[in-house]
Image (tube, rainbow, N blue to C red; front, side):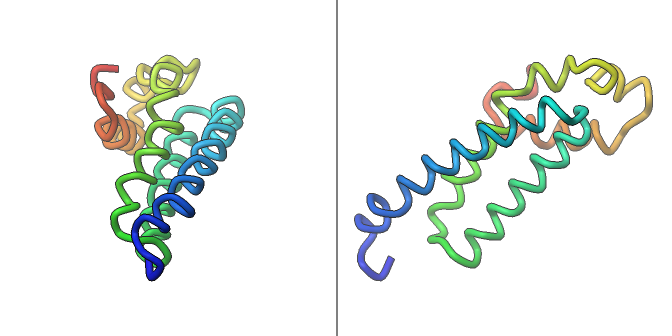
Length: 119
């Protein structure tokens, strides 16, 4: 930022967001294949919190909304239907098995994305 906002945005932020999207796309695909719905949601929540913390220490405050949007898109929005309908751990199983923490986490994460709660 000391070099100016245009330098920050063009030379750092834009490539950073692109690389982050690629990273979270790959990581979320790996998680969706190896985790149940509850564990996936915990990992997504942890990643969001890590990025918010990273912005606090290392990035311009204006970057927070942009990087959280990347994480929300790649880890939540792209996998909502799969998470809801996941065999043995999706929404119905969470309700039947009284997994209130997982249900609360699903609700709080899904509400972060457009039309998330309608899923």
